[in-house]
Structure formats: C-alpha cells, structure tokens
Amino acid sequence: MAAAQGYDKAKVIKKNTDGVFSSKNIYRKELVAYLQENQVGTLIITGANGGACVYLSMRGALDNNCTVIAYNRGIADFNFKDFIYPFAGYYDNTELNCKNCSFKEVSSMDGVVSNMINNMRAIEASPVFSKKDKSGR
Image 1 (cartoon, helix red, strand yellow):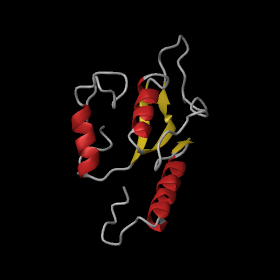
Image 2 (cartoon, helix red, strand yellow):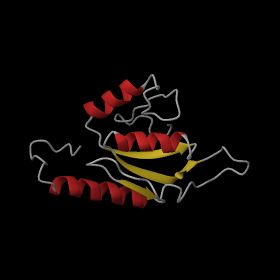
Image 3 (cartoon, one colour):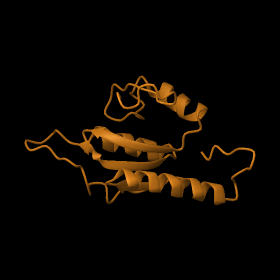
Image 4 (cartoon, helix red, strand yellow):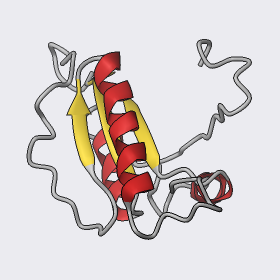
C-alpha cells in the first residue's frame, strides 16, 4: 500500500471473508461500485493466502466477468509449515465461466504490463468498442 500512496486512482477496499467478491463480505458493494464507476475490467491480483483468499478473490472476479492477471511473485501461502512463495503454477486449471474475461498467471512485472497492453489492444479491436467510450471495460 505504501507504493501506491499518493496515486489518485489507488483504492483500498477491506474484506471480512476469504474472497473479496463473496456475498458475505460486508465491503463487497463498495468494491463492485468502485469497479463499475471507474470502468475497471482487469484486476491484477496479489496477496496471501494463495490457496484461499487469493484464489476465492480471483474466482469471484472471473465470476463477475473481470479479466484477471495473477502476479504469482506477489502471492504467497502461509497455511503450510513451509510457506509457499512464489505461489506459481497452482492456478493452471482455472476454468473460465464468463463470456468476456480471461485469466493469466505471470511471474514478472513485464508479464503484467504485456498482458495489460494485449488486453487493451483486444478491447480496442473488438466490434463493440465505441470510439466515444474508450474505457475498455
């Protein structure tokens, strides 16, 4: 959070359940409203614990038709005697149940940036992309 301090588009949203998109998360409405208001369609996911909180948040994002980029060097799991870091290769079988989303696991910031650029190019090339609305949801 310190790295994003001062960045006007950074938003901290709390959670009180494993998955941030869980219906039991009392902060879910705030998250969904923020994503809609700011036309956010791609989430870069990091955090702990990779097999629970992070996984459930990714599933929730995908179920809400968001594109997910999992930055595995920013994901750890402390639920084991020898904690897992980086949490790499554990999401290989992630199924997509959404029509306009995608999932990618990356291990470098270059991979994150490359995926963001590719996502924007795909959105701009899509027939539903309006020249008036360059938000690219």
